[in-house]
Length: 345
Picture 1 (tube, helix red, strand yellow):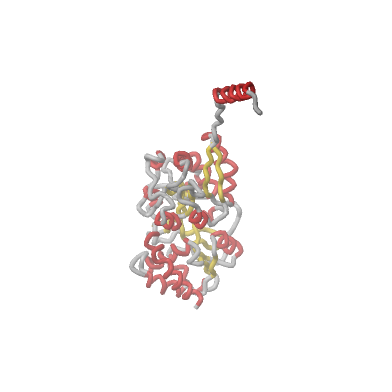
Picture 2 (cartoon, one colour):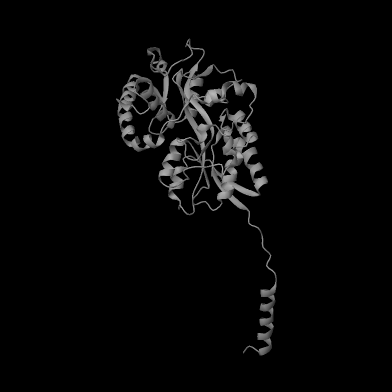
């Protein structure tokens, strides 16, 4: 039997506990992002992300295990796996159609958007492009080749078996090249009949999954001319490698590094702050010179050797061609079947 005195003592203790002021610990916010590996990943994890965490008093969880989109698709929209998605434009367009990312990032959310080149927020972009690369032709300088001046140069008979391209269903550079074939040999980027005919004429051609493989094939001489983005060649500057990059006269295709925010993010303000941070001139300069990507912010001042080669003026940026990924993605299944048949035949 519990005595009245015991009850009073316990009751008094409980009252004391209730009356005591609560000690609240501020919870550190966590920002979940995707980011590339390689040299880009080294700079991000070694310098860029620690500085962001310190300034914004947060923790960043960075996923480098590509592909990211299937993982985002599998997570709940109201509690997404990522707060900020970093991918290329083709995947951002797929994601916005599925409601996985925001359609646009504006100056209201990200003030530094005010200083970007028009391509970075054009009608061909979902989210905002923080960097771009030019997709053109890489070639060996020690094989007696003239510097390519046209996309048609890749079809030269002397390149049979030593020209390089991409497995179109899995690589956006290959998809860009296919559209460019439509422009060069037909009526425009959407002239698929002309593109298919031109693709047939490029056989035999060595095909790869990723740019890193194309780099290795160019460096080894297994491919002596191939489709590649400029940074995949320029990153070997100063290493005495017999490779160079050419921008064909018909124009270069844009390979954009796009950041976007997931609508269901629980830390949207921090997500926008991260994109704004990535567009700061000092951060842009660090990464641009580290991986040879062309910065989207017009205020970035690069060192002379980078400025000479990268897209750092309005005139250079004007050579960029941005494909209509919404149009392409809607036809991708049929295109994949057709190109697979052509290249296997």
